[in-house]
Length: 552
Image (tube, rainbow, N blue to C red; front, side):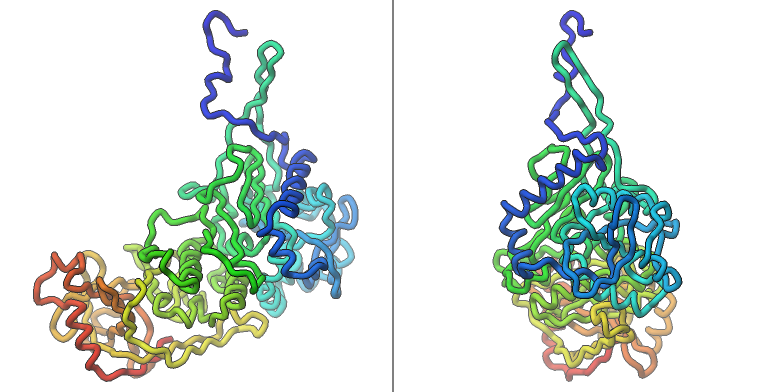
């Protein structure tokens, strides 16, 4: 009871907004909210309709294996043959505990029936929710790929672009860190009444945004595989703590209704640049912006003046800046986990893929850098990546970009990437070499406060950002003359290039990135006058004999 001049309790709720309360995100009310979003998407979103109409008027072909919801609490694995129907994908964290998987020994058993009580709770919840939506098929990676068959795994990982792109919607267990955690949560509303006035009040759910995408709040969004699952799917339904978030090509909307549409700094906006529709001309996309960097390391160019192909390659690098920070259980999955995106990008823009880079844009893609002060002790051999690829250093790489009009110092002689499987030319690699031709200068390296400095022809002034800890090889490489610098590009402010290390008379490996500022460059105001400037190096490079360099 309110006495005297005491305010009504809800008057003190600042920024309170009407919301949709389901009680549980797995309730029939929640399913009705999702159905309303799907109908709205089909009827009112031309960008969503165009993706579907570009495929055909028919239903999509079902994947090689799919889980069929036969009846209440009865499901089985199915191997359809040229069968068409709507289906859903499940995006989830496996977690530390082993999820239920299909293996060679259990395949025939699961084709007959998968025992309901043996399914992890997340799987059961997803299937239960699909019954509300009247969708009969669901694709779950751990069950639809034979996990102890390398051949089947390679084949299916090469089909990810189609599997997620053709799904009606992807159900994402965004709040769950394991497959046993389940999808559904309650909204925990509190009833407040005064006379005939009744209110249900709940705390506003937290949305994914820069700085709060953590293992605790949004564990799924910290995993490497989720990148292509989110970007390739035409629609995603996020099951979060106490609410649902529906994402499509138009944008994203949350069930808490704090805004009509979430801003691009939340879940972001999916974009046709990642669709399988090769005819659609995409605008500059905002990729996966809920994990946007807090700095703009690659945005040193005017996007409005960039040709479309520069924008597309720039978006690829921006995606990699976040993807390379995400977690993978097995580092060998670093390429397969984005092979669907690479396939889609290659088909749409007619670009040639090479170990996470694009041949047509090596002038920029080669200039990735490890930004951390603490460098890895050694290269990640388990990634199966060449030294010239960002994937060779594991988590935490980023990219620099070159301003338009930069002078190139190298030409590409050959790029030879041999895939591990014919099913997935964008996945794991057997081998990869890059052959370039350009001027090559000997370097002597020494430690500095910012990383390493390099000496050429008796003068310093070349700064080096190493890819890994060079201490174990520094003394011997300097003594034997095994460090070299290959210039890549010159901009108005500096020259940038690769630091290479040669083992005996064999091929080279990349070990870092070097740069030398111009006379007007910012850092040169603090450097001795006798140190190298970009202008002097540029003149020397123009008079040098070109060398052919093979980098592994």
